[in-house]
Image (cartoon, rainbow, N blue to C red):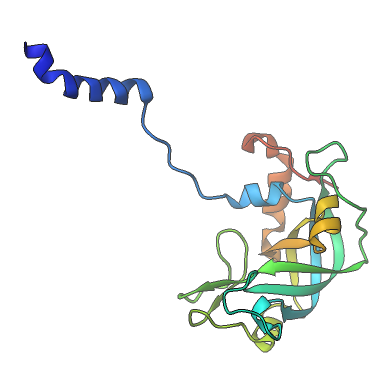
Length: 193
């Protein structure tokens, strides 16, 4: 009789012990973003303009993608490349000295920071505002950055764009160290050039 009365509580304890605690989803680490890239480069930004869909005449206010930035960059140095046998190999060869267009997400925040944890430049703006080209140009143009590029065959053929993440150039040593020790993150990473 006593066991029947305590059965619901015992069943709950057994479920917790056998099932274990639930796992929270971890935020993406900067190392994972870097290692998931096709190329890791150092580049000078020549121009920066908004690629926000709301700037297109006749677009809906709820269109996607919003808060994208188009950068024209001059590749100064290739720090790392995914090997040809990787899950996400390069869709084409990238050369130092090339000028390419990339798109990056612009992050809107309510604090005065320049970069977020994933390496994206952040902007303090009111909610729903389209970032003006002048602010984007001032934040990027004429500066050298560390960038991780997604430049697979799918990116080039189907998406029609090279997406990137941007870090301050002071993160170059971190990027080289991360690529050299990528095994600790359980993934293949762009290999140092």
